Amino acid sequence: MGSTYSIKWVAADGSPGPEKLQASLENQFDEFDAEVSTWRDDSDLARFNALLAGACQSMPQSILDLVGFAQRLNRDSEGGFDVTVGPLLEVWGFQRGDGMQVVPVQAEIDKALQNVGQQHLRIEKDQLCKDNDLKVDLSSIAAGYMVDRVAEHLLSLGIKDYMVEITGELKAAGVKPGENPWRIAIEEPRDDERTASLIVELDGYAVSTSGDYRNYFEYEGQRYSHTVNPRSGWPVMHNLTAVTVMDPSAMVADGLSTVLLILGPEKGWEYAQENNVAALFVLREGAEFVSRPTPLFEALVKSEE
Image (cartoon, rainbow, N blue to C red):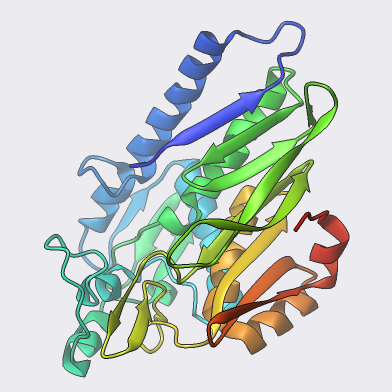
């Protein structure tokens, strides 16, 4: 997955030791990597991406689950969430091999948009099909999906007290030794330093943050985020700089934090309210940040300034 993971747990009666547990988890990681990786040419997803328009391919359950959830997010965000957005990220320089980030001309954006559109992707029984020359990248929800899988694996071994973090997506349940809660810092969206804006205590919940403050570039005084709107082809341009979501499912938290960021401060807030999402919106107002939690987020979170 091109990243790191960290797992902490309290051993239960009969649960395996660290080496055996790590080996069993890394077997799962290897299997998942062989299914959904975009870093290798032989994964199931890479082979699908190499197919021509109009083709179908049998897929493992992980990909079917991820695409099915992505279709829901695409629908709920009115097309704002899209796992085929890769060509746009490339034309904006966020996935270019030379590392150059530039503001493209509209003709380049229009050309990239021809190969973007999750509506051209569909599931037929155990197959994934595409009606256009699409390339699918599930990275936006894959880490959350694996956090949920690891948590389920730990529970199957009788381990009920744990914290699982994979490439920044995190879930915790139970307590640490001494009956202390798992306490997680939510970062303030600053460009210059890492500062905790609040501390949350997690028990059975996952937490995910999406923002524009880590992966972006500036040109002629304008900030361009790596979060690109697949409908317009342009990065999202609003003052909502970060969204944190809490949910029992890490995959759901992972996806919804991205959806709310794409929808923006007004539509995103309306969506979170209508769907009872536990979310913290952080808006940039000049040089300051203003936090706006939904009622469910306030009810779930215990914070320390």
